[in-house]
Image 1 (cartoon, rainbow, N blue to C red):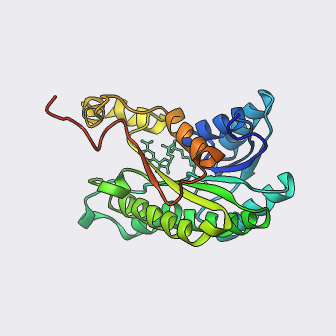
Image 2: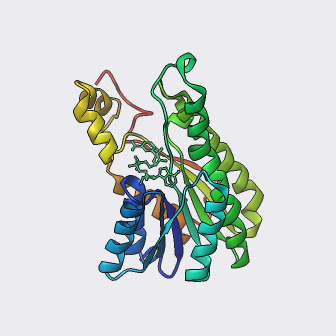
Length: 255
Ligand SMILES: NC(=O)c1ccc[n+]([C@@H]2O[C@H](COP(=O)([O-])OP(=O)(O)OC[C@H]3O[C@@H](n4cnc5c(N)ncnc54)[C@H](O)[C@@H]3O)[C@@H](O)[C@H]2O)c1
């Protein structure tokens, strides 16, 4: 029960890493505000938690919309009375193109959800946490934010921005008992990733081969890292971009 009695808000919790994180936080004892712009998926995550004896509500919100995020945090406080932990996980990559071929609208959409969305969430989460003496925030970045990713210029730039935002907020609020960390996942086997690997010939071998472990991660392996960083066990960790990548960064590719 790593997160017993804590109230956690998780964006993009309708599927993938966000869903696994919401389920794991509930198992670890947290009350969970499940946030997604897809109503059916988000509600299903909250229902699954409540069915297992946990406590969750679903809040429909779009992280790129200011009023939506202001209301998201207000709804969480109205229901649970406080906010202790947040995992800002929702993101979008709007294009797959060379840098010079990237459309401006794709650039803008990716920044709006993947970078501005994280800032908007923190803008309202931080004041809420300050009211009850502090909290812990985990922003989901990506290895793309550290080493770039070909064909994903807007996404890689946004994810690098998420690390900068994380470190800035960590420095600003450290003395007020708010810790802010990031997670930089490698390839994680979500539904979207599985579809891509099934569709593109040779992609599975190529993508798995970039990981020293020669496999993709499970959503739960990111959820575990998020639970730890949100817990009191990580009490001296702030401003850290935690790489959880099955060894992409240390890949002994000649082995
Ligand atoms: N899957 C990977 O290999 C991988 C690798 C590195 C980083 N990441 C990051 O992990 C996070 C989760 O990725 P995933 O693969 O689980 O994604 P996913 O596509 O499986 O799920 C994303 C969820 O976010 C929701 N969402 C999207 N835009 C939203 C918005 N504007 N407002 C609210 N909700 C929104 C979607 O409805 C969906 O439920 C993202 O930040 C992603 O960039 C994923």
